[in-house]
Image 1 (tube, rainbow, N blue to C red):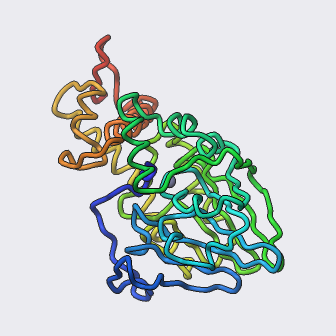
Image 2: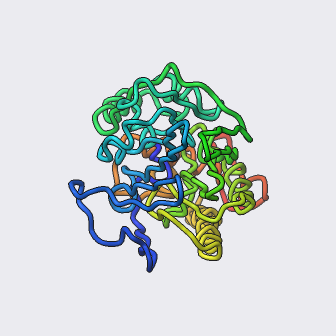
Length: 328
Ligand SMILES: [Zn+2]
């Protein structure tokens, strides 16, 4: 899921950047497109890494070859990916772990708050917050579609961790919200920041898992521009930004989606009192005719978080013991 996250299938397709090297139509059999910044290579997934695919970053240190995440496209890169010795996961979600099965001997590291989700299926279920009914179908789906296998050998890192790969250094910036352990990874001296699922997509931020947090996501969006980067690489869809002004404009539009959702939720309450179940059935973030195993759980987590914010702000109230909500 995770995809879910943020990037789960969404319906607003952003236009490619004018200079987007991936703008021409690609099929899964075409060579993987790439961009290079010094020792950093960005391999673009299908449709510029639109979910379920993603964009693969590989750093060729003189001592160590590191991959940031392992999206589906990693299965089509070949020896350059398969020689990876160290996988630094920016966070745990099925679409970022789809190439781990190719690297049984590589060291795998992820922020300590996402570690259980990488080490075991039970940890991943808790991370997603899947209902009992959704858990088994989800496991079958991500095994089939994302080559899912847990990595009990994975280890944790913390905010500020650094890795010296040999003439290339990586630094982790903990930017939670999408998941509790979500991080950006900055490569120096190139100044390339892999910003993961703060993906700047037209869908907007995804915080529909148990391990997500809306207030943290808002803070992480505010902190992201402080990372001393010259190039920003998203996991999905948007790809690469090389101009700070364009990156900041995309970030502002992305952040605005959060408040747009709160306004939409208030409109949903305008028609009368609603329970959380009724709001979930109405759908806040996905179309009502779109069905997936995880949809109801994701809608519930997302709506609950907006209701909490609106209750706190005094814009919504819970009116009775039946758990019905009204505009304040
Ligand atoms: Zn994700």
